[in-house]
Length: 169
Ligand code: CDP
Ligand code: MG
Image (cartoon, rainbow, N blue to C red):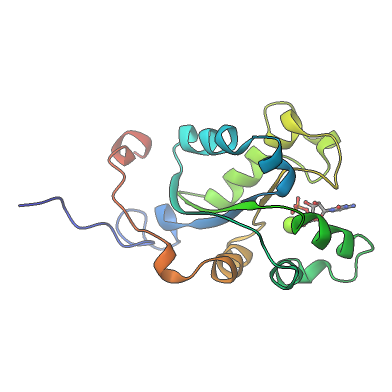
């Protein structure tokens, strides 16, 4: 009796690549939280059919943010970026699904909101590159690094999504 055990991430159907077990890191930035966009943003990913496996609201330290954006350390906007990201609480999330890294980037839009199409999160909710409401990992490898930077393994929950059979072939 009882429900079937949860499918291990990256296994089961579509094995080989990460398949349905691919994960990405998303953060709603301080402006997104202050502008009450948390529910709207989560709603978009949820309705798309992506699976939420980690979620927390936190005030990120400058140390964490410097590490998160380490690849941009030589850019002129790096200090301003770290200050902005630590200026209020952020909502950190991990979403899972087929091609989730690319799908989430597409739903977020371009780095510069002015180049983001309507219908994307940045295209709909912001105007300036320095206040662009949301972060999403840019590759499977950076997703892996960012998830381990922001979440302890036990903060991620592997659960059976009963809608999966209606979302995947
Ligand atoms: O966030 P995304 O991956 O689209 O862009 P990025 O090139 O990795 O830059 C990270 C973040 O730095 C952006 O999301 C902006 O918040 C910020 N940024 C900025 O403030 N000014 C720029 N000219 C470029 C990026
Ligand atoms: Mg980036």
